[in-house]
Image (cartoon, rainbow, N blue to C red):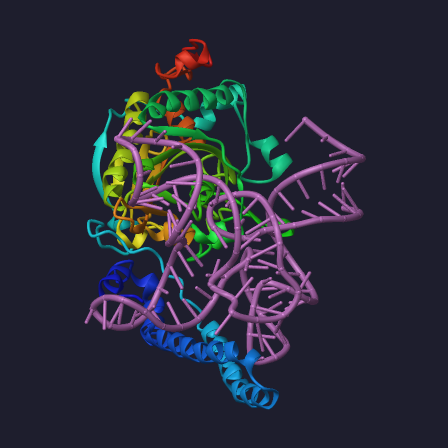
Length: 409
RNA sequence: GGAGGGGUGGCUGAGUGGUCGAAAGCGACGGUCUUGAAAACCGUUAGACCUUCACGGGUCUCGUGAGUUCGAAUCUCACCCCCUCCGCCA
């Protein structure tokens, strides 16, 4: 079941998993296998005898059935035993190059890119948009409660400019645009690894319809190819997905309570790749490179952070975050994330590739933010603000806004 | 929301308790014939897992799960999905 290397890999995820590892120790997995073999042996006896029954004379038939009955009962008992061995849900194993560490304090900043703007008294994005009510939180709260807001006017238009800009950069790299369902069934959400390890508290659940609202398009794109077998030539399969994303933000009380930085609903463009196993590390670097290309096009100052083992999400084997500079906070804040889930999700989803040799193998699944639109708008507003309170529009976006050059002028 | 029909191998489709993992046809693959091709003819043709050096053997799978039975594609229950008609609706 689980080998030594995997066990060590899990250990690297840190203290949060210590309890889980103890539990694993008891369950060698061997018992499970032995039970199943025992069951198969009994089943073989029944099957063999059952075939002979129709041809038997009546009294021999009776005798045989009487002999088989206890075996059949034994099978039922074994089946029950197997069913009771609840499978322990394990997270993905970190890749070897992922740094050790318990939490985000052990994350590694790989590089800082771009020039931070020199601003005397930087305003935050709320102050910058208040005069024209481009971010309407009051009405958001009135209609939907806390952590909801309206994007209006130029800011709403900028959402679509960002989308167009991203498409112009990404779609010529072999990605297919897709608008996925934002509600998915429980088995798909579970297969993607988001109903374990605490993730279950952060997704919206529509109980009446047994559906989950996606927290990211990733959860809808992965299951797209569930139970499918790719040919080698079809890979890599790359999608650029646009979707609204929904997060309960349970447990984030007190964090970023103001504004639209952390909200229950936001729109996001997400890249997603299905690749050959040996190609996934390259693909992961590609996704990161595209993210950086997008940010450099916008000329936003950012840094690239590699998450340590203890800070990885449940299905992830390696994650890079891009954090963008927010002048009002004097800090870098997460705007992008890219992960390889190796074969963790593809196993649960039963997605394979047929090799030219005929062998089938699980593909690797990767995801990466193109733009989390709300947070990107925040970063643009703050980094492009002028001393007079107006905001210049990044040149790469202007063509998508009929040449509009500034907000608030 | 109401009424009805249906889910079987790559496809079509037969199969209502017992050598059925499954007829037949199509398709695909291999062969014979042919200068080559077509046609015709012959043959092969589901998957996952366990086991074996290998030949092979075994278990599971007929939408999914549970049940009845010595034995389930076939009977019972629940669920999922698809189609048709009506209603509602962007």
